[in-house]
Image (cartoon, rainbow, N blue to C red; front, top):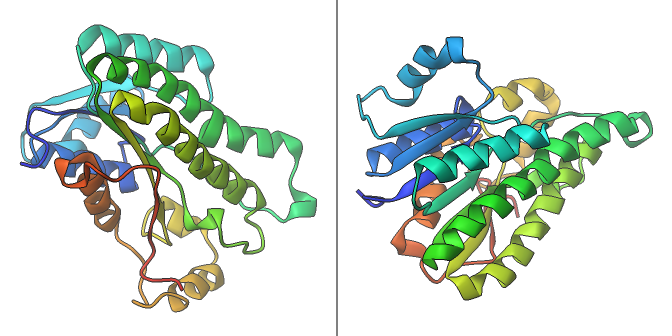
Length: 247
């Protein structure tokens, strides 16, 4: 129960890493505000996925990071229904592959809208609520694609690199308010994005790691739990790789 009585926001909570983080936080005593793009008719399915153990400390919020007005509406809903927020996990994101010369400006803007600009806007709003209580942990999900320049990763890798760098600026500025900000950079992980990669690209990354396997979403959730809990109270401004030891 590392997060007993804590309130945590997890974006992209309907699948993959976000789903594992939301479940892990619930199992450790947190109230979880699960933000997803899922429509209302999928709510029962989503609740069953997020909450197989019947834990009732769960709130669903509609969030589309590509739409500024939806982000602001989600912030308002969260602030209206919760007097404090202890943890924010910025997990939601989109992937796209394409060689430099073939990447359109439209696709690049789409990636940055969701993976960077939308995340920044959401964090600005939630950080204001954290500042009132002089405490909080913000966990941003980046990627090892931010620092491994494989072919076809220009857009996705750049958006994740920008978010990792932004995490360090957030940590510098919010530290005085007792708010810690860290980024997790997962390696290749068995999610929907794993299935979008070519087998050659997957094997290259797996074989370059010391443990010679892909990460499971739970591996990333365990790191998020550590950063969200009081076990990491003196850790901020870090980009922590969870990649099986790519050295």
